[in-house]
Length: 187
Length: 122
Image (cartoon, rainbow over all chains, first blue to last red; front, side, top):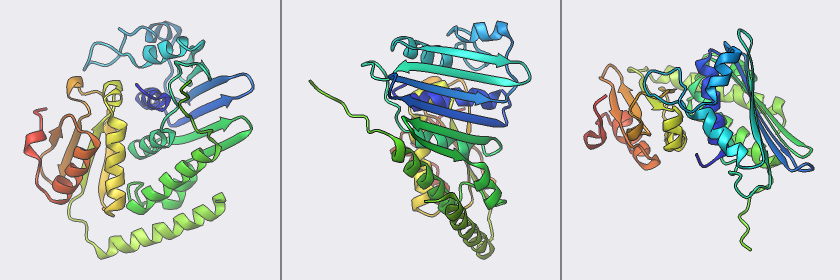
């Protein structure tokens, strides 16, 4: 994976597999303490302590199509390479919270990447779930909630071209409004 | 852009979409499914998905259902895209980069002709 946004997409898919109805993605860029935190919070079926301990193992998976899981261990390894960590808090029947933390300025920290693309993909692909995003950079916050959009649209699908343009516009404008451009510095 | 104003805009978009639907009787919907397990995402499935959505947006194509599925066990062929046009059979494509995704929408979903050289048995 080349972007943290791709990891978030991957982790959020687990929420859907867990039957979540509400999923919130959180990205916090803490400029004072130089930390970058990613959260995926869902109200899916949750996991007991035994399963939680296993999901960090790359060779654990509940799927049947392939013998390895990989999603969570990949993100955990990426975080640990950047003075960070990955923590899972899960309660069966209530949901799962996965928090990943990085040293924001770490040379090996992947770029956040196309967060708008990740959000758009999730909203379109799983319209049955309620998607939220909270993106914070320092004091600036962008919040997105797809419920008012769906309530307004009623029976018109999200893949209607003009609707796609509308949602993409909100996400791209909102995210670029708070983001500090990531530049490659060659010294 | 304030939220209230943008939802007002969305209402207008909705009305226009419903108006358009009245004019055009739907002749069997098309479905595009992108495989998005960890393997698909790592192979570039999100950019493939984005290219499909962009094509729908720029060419103004209504009545296409876009969804996704997890790993289907052909990780080496990712990104994988499955297409069903109307009552036709499901066609599976492998190694779908954004360029190929745009061609699939234009030539298969709109044009009705599958791109045989890119299909994989699934």
